[in-house]
Length: 465
Image (cartoon, rainbow, N blue to C red; front, side):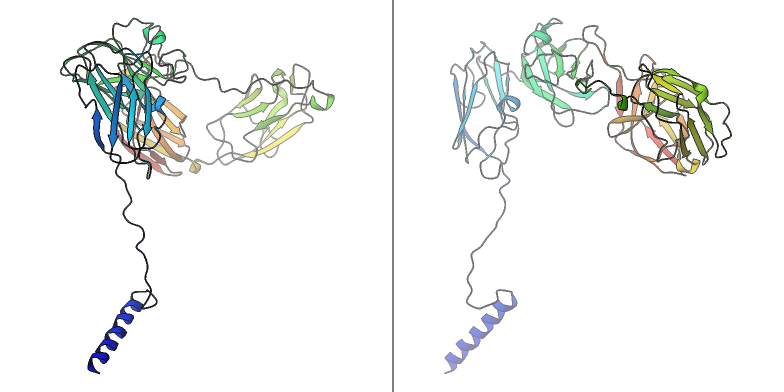
């Protein structure tokens, strides 16, 4: 009886423990789920021929990994073979192996490297084996020299990891435009690049955003960079910095469409202006933008007045294609009226606006702006620096810097990226390079910290270049 009583007591205690821990019953049995997620990329078990093989004579290479390999990812963009072959190898993955079939005749006494970039990943979790590189030599030694550097976008000071860097031996000016490179390297997210297993010698070096995959510079709209002179690869090399530019911008205008001839109902001129629905900027002109180019403008019939229709003196009205621009010194926090008489403007078909219009608007107040003071150190004023305020990759404000302290009132509030343009030709804007004329692009420094301008506030910052 004592044993039975003891067993019964132990059973009651066990069930109580199970209930407290949330199982909800003393007889429920469950399986273990979850576990640590696999984050380890595939591990190479063997290579045939082995890594760093010399006197290589075959045409097939096989790698065996410790887990199943997914289909190789974007072979064309990910895998770099150096020296660059005339005929691309064939790459395949099957189960736990990756194989290469060489289809080009290998050069004698040459070190080759095959960088897989992000092409190799496992099947289950997609873990990527980044930059796995296989090196072999058709001679008796493995070349071990390296060359590194960085590619910056000259216009913005930013980087572009989709660019490639190219090396040529015995190149002339047109080589990069007509022939594929001898060696290539990927540009990383921070703009850096590295060539490994190079032989000693002189190389012409370029960077390219290869739009068509041809590995040649064949369009002035492609991002491109070149060094002024060849680099000599030796045991010790200084890093190379290349400044990329597009000599011509891509035309983003809409394609021309055929429209029907205008009917009588369509002949009236229409216009838009930013003064409608929002306050007029104290620093800007008032602009009327018409749907057609203007042939004639009668400035006496474009009248700026106060609320009592008293004409504002000293207003300059000018025509610029399809825009009528009013220039004046605005009074802050003031109400205005703009009277545009019916026949003030005419286009080439003698069309006018439908009727005389009166536009009512108000100007901003000085408290709607911030006061900005920037103090620069280590800035070279002899290089004609230009201060650029950038939003969403567009330069919103631009000012020449003539002293180490810069200040500006009536600055629009907002958060801005700061860039410094070194304006070599002192024309106030960024100019691209020209490979044919051997002119490097003007260079821009992008500062890592943004500046926040608050309205009705003294916004001061120290900038160390």
